[in-house]
Amino acid sequence: MSFSIRIVSLIAGLATALTLAAPAAAQQAAPAPAASVQAAPIKVASGVQYELIGRWDIARLNQILTKDTPTFAGVTVAYTPARNAVKLYRVTYPSVVPEQGNRPTVASGLLAVPDMAETVFPMVSYQHGTVYGKEQVPSFPEQSPETQLMIAQFAGQGYLVIGADYFGMGVSKEPEGYLVKGSHQQATYDMVVASRAVLADLKLADSKLFLSGWSQGGFVTLAMLERLEAVGMPVKAATTASAPADAFAAFNGFLNFPRKIDANWITMIFILNVFSFENYHNIPGLARSVLTDETYEISRKAYLREPFDPAAVPTDLKKLIRPEYFDAQFFANSAYGRLVAKTSAYRWLIRTPVRTYYGLTDEAIRIEIGQLPMSYQKAIGNDKVEAVPTGDTSHRGTFATAVPQWKAWFDGQ
Image 1 (spheres, rainbow, N blue to C red):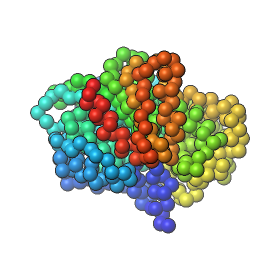
Image 2: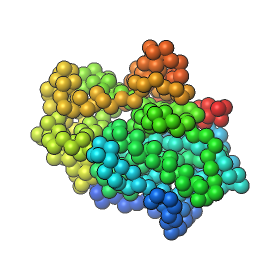
Image 3: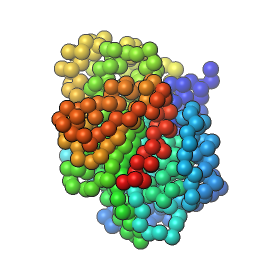
């Protein structure tokens, strides 16, 4: 098996189709297509700036819907054809790291604008799934198949599409903050504010805001909704696909009740998360306390995107995680377990209509995890959240199947 294929087999399920041919630290950006354009950055209010990075015509958008997405997701889904071209902008904006006393930082994201005569559009904030490459994120759309689908299905149908890259991804100089809830909330909230500043400079505006996200991005979407409801920013509706709304429940399942269909890349989720918690919560030695001595160094290199042999990263959690963590009580009482237990995004009284889509054969998210936000809200007596099955779909297939259902529901709002 070639080096490239080994990397893909280890990490591909992380939520986008990876085509790595070298260690992450040596990755090269994908060449821009002929339709791409590059313009000098334009500065607007409060440190926000944006630059035009491309224009995708209708033919390109429909190719994404009919050819590229089926290849990526492994399922064929009927999408509404694009009816307009789309302009793509990379937005950089100031933010803060809440876990570190609101230390200032700079983040990036995508703004996709329908190339139409209208000046007011509905807007979808899309929160991306787990990816390995720093540029496999919305503001580098050529490297993000999931973002391409959102652009083609929504922006190609007259929606504004925005998407934060999260701290540590895109142009961010931070280490990755994987499932660090406060930072995800901050990055996404500030992206909405920054995008509206850019739209004002373009003499455009949004009429209503929707939220959507897949996989990790499903968690981020719910966390973002919690923040937006708390500050009073109106959200018309929100959707997720394959959302790990409760990391503690999901991680306990992986550790103590593994399924035969569990993905072999779940080990990378633990690696990214434990080092993220160590860095963002400033707990030196946290990762070393969780990972086995044999796998600590290769895991550290993987998290930092230093050159490493991906074949050396175990796909068996029992080889990656110290044996005491397979004791549920030990895990719950550990420093790591206590942080994971705080990583949930459904335990408040949700006021916005929400639909969480889940697959019956998703190799990463159990059916019960997909239903959990609805079950919790119904336990309160709240009927704002509905869980929707997508059939016998894989992790990627759940996303690809859910997207046109998201749009049909949003269209009716």
